[in-house]
Length: 232
Image (cartoon, rainbow, N blue to C red; front, side, top):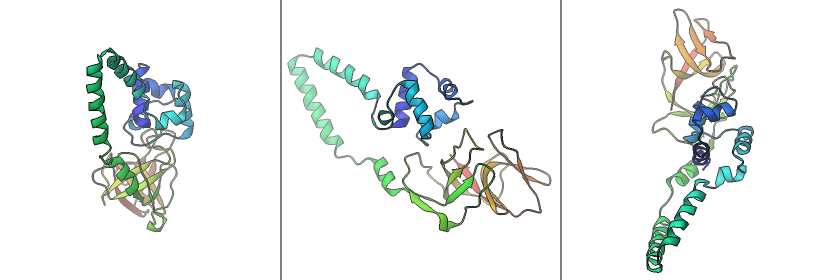
């Protein structure tokens, strides 16, 4: 519901995604775009900022279809202009549609009940070793799930913002070799990272999207393992 409400409120206030991003202190619109796609939900601090910006209670922002209020007003206005006979037809049709709707199983509810298995955490910061499968857990997930993936990880750190936030779930397709320029999960010695990967003459360079972080270089003296490529 949050994704739909965010897009509704942004468009209602005549904002582009970049306009909203800047009001929230972000340099690009990528996070706003991913929020509206339902890929993930921002942290509570950001939710509070959005709530204040649009003057909407957080509970309503997360759980109530805010766009339905405007739609309902239009429906009632049109309905009241109909004569009694036509109002009766509209009511009977709406009643039938409601009965049919109640028979449908929401595929999103099924997905939430199934959940996804998180293999572990990968660092979007200075590196954290947490690829041991014994650390995994099953969680419910409300965002979009790729048609094909092999592993799911939880991002730890903020070096890949704004594309990947701390605490966000990422999906990975196993791939044993580095792909130049791709975002991949890589283990260097006893640390695992999510970074952009670049092949150089004697090095493997791991690059953060957040410019506050330095590149990480690995060479023949390191134990390098390519876990896989992040899929969107």
